[in-house]
Length: 293
Image (cartoon, rainbow, N blue to C red; front, side):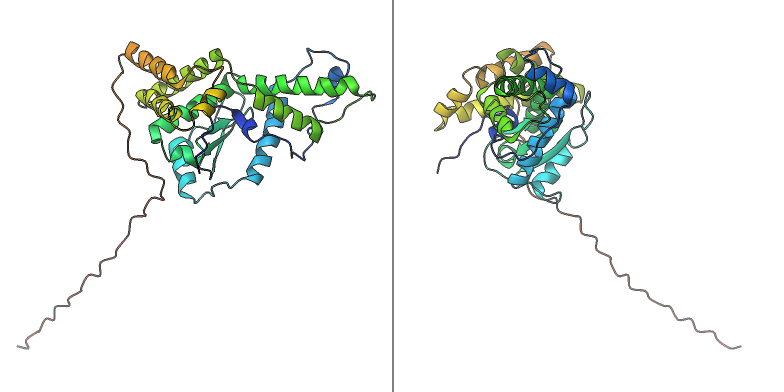
């Protein structure tokens, strides 16, 4: 069976929403504006985060998530767990135990990394990839994508609705929103800006910036294999991995930081606890004989 390669950065829409049971209430003001056909209705960061969280909670329930004691989870927490504070969002991390190569971040700050990605990238390369995904959140790409999908589907339903008030986003709407996001892709500009965000993150925190080039080289090499047609289809509106690797290299060269990257050992096993051996010290009691005078 061929290993399916899922392109990085397709957000949480990779799984869709078709079986979503939750209903998200965005408030009367926003929904009322949608029903009246007002295209400039308010859709705040909080709205995007609420919808994203509901989607991620659903996905977490439907997929095998690495437990806190799982080696993959331990590694991810060690590599990236200390970075939780964002501008208006709080990051949380989990690993999906899936062989596919993928990672995504959503508007609520949820970051999900596939074990398949962790099997082929070392710690620095993971930092580069996850940094890129967080870049989409920080740059509001994730918010804008879900907003566009929500507007499209909510307006479609509103046009056919006879009611004067829509209290919640229904399962049907969530399914349509999921389909819309699956069909949408980030623009070249958005991808380039997320790449730059990742590079700056590595540089700011003292990591090897050349790991970004290396990560894209890995993806480029994979795209030349049996899944090339799938990659071409998914990446049709995005800069290819080879070009992004070259861009990362040029950034490092400009900063005087470039050096060919050598991938480090990839360890996805639980760290071995240091064994504490208590040496039993032989206590010798020296008997002293007191001579009587």
